[in-house]
Length: 250
Image (cartoon, rainbow, N blue to C red):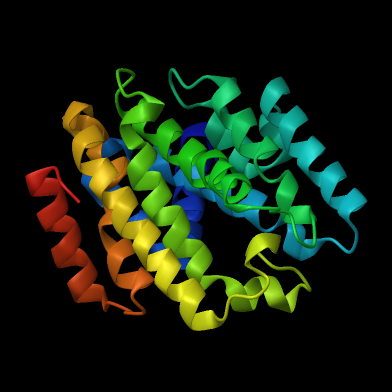
């Protein structure tokens, strides 16, 4: 197989992976034109990092795995993993943005990583925020992290609100220790409130975001529905994403 054919096959494989494991981001990336495959590479990295805690038996093994990703990114080891190969060919993306995504996953290895809500918000900024910022910068170098902070927080809060069973299955909890006495209804209501507040914040921030970068944040338009317990179907998702991209608003 020729080098161009191999690269094409690898790109198609990663895109298919993201479509399966991260369908909302995959859908939004369809609006990025020829850069959609580049976004898929970043979303595939996010998937690999997020699943580290699910695939190791001890925190130490998780730390070793994260270190492997960190070193692979820093050294540009294309041969070590298809995701690393795809990332190494992305134009103009600083390695520090990718390394920040790796560092952000350290709390995933702890049984109860968040002492309070400030720690939780810092985690959202470091995970959902770093990924969204990297994608926005990839689409337009003029995009800044502050422009996507609210959108990323809305998505991060909504995601955590849905992830309780997955964390519990690993013997872990995402809710802060300070929420020990809160019941599920109170937690759901608080998550919905934080999502609404983050979307309000995003409305002002996104006015400065370059138009080319909007596909990197468009999926956050679904955060409100998820936070309120709704599960939009494929057609509804597509309609909402089209509306968000056309308006440039969530």
